[in-house]
Image (cartoon, rainbow, N blue to C red; front, side):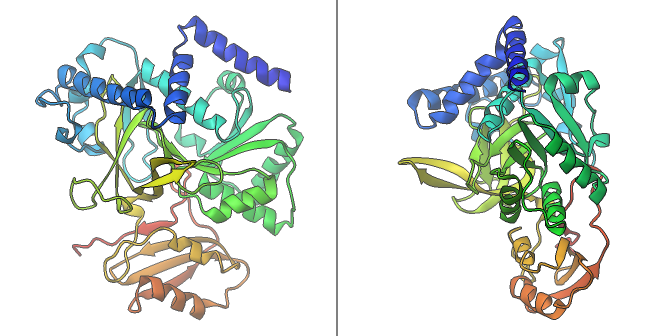
Length: 436
């Protein structure tokens, strides 16, 4: 197995070499900047990439051609709707006749969304994934079990899957029988391997193992990465218990790429400054949020020259602050809270952290949960429980301490929390419009 893994790695880098070594060059650059965050040369490179992108956008696109300074503060905040309404204006004139690729979101929280990227950006993305995957214990050549709703995406053909050593696992109907089959496959597969998928899917797998009384799954699993959804610390602990692997969460999106990732054993996210410039802006205006304050995550993609994406409001919320590790100070994302539409407020109107979900974990009878805010004071909890739930009164009273004493809480018991069309599971849904 090790020979096969090494062979795949050698072949990948050899093919890259024949094509000019772009991925290798990007990989070295990302590694240097990430591992030397405060080095003068590292900071200089980041500044150079930002200024080069801004100048390129001003001089080659219609959307940005009225901006006369390279100060990023003077660039407007954009979002999906603005880009969709101005596709041609974001297109660089230098890249109109050059080959490009399109990347699309699944449209899990609205209409699908497509962005065009140049091939250098694609190489940068590949290098990002290789480097940051290595930090989780996954090496190029290992087998990857990729858990997602594959029918919503362009599924890799058998040749691509073989070359990239990817095993696609569709999670649309992740029944107990499907999970059991997956576990057996992992055990039989003696190769070094990693798993990548929606955070809620790993929670579901661990709940299955708990129900079956499994103590440990010995399967050479080297890396587990949760994506697209908030990863509960309890899921991390469960993965460690059953697979003896330190699970981490990755913050990424289809339109940009790998933006931030948790170091092993940490809850914060290290920002991929080698490839992105990240800001946290206030919830109600476009001013910078104070350190430690919840705000909108706004991303500038430093390497998409086909369609420059500058100060892009991702629709997600987060908190940025400084930490000190090994004598070095760095700003990190303390939290990535998820999409604005997936945030709920208490009855006084204050936004609550998604950490409120962790409170439910103490109720061991509850296997799945979803909180829906209906109005300013009305909340619906959808619960999947084992047999019956006898602690309703305790549950409701506890959540009133978080939501407000005047909160009207209703419990609804379900067989399953439905998945979105993308295969993700929304743990929090806000149907309340403050203007109502």
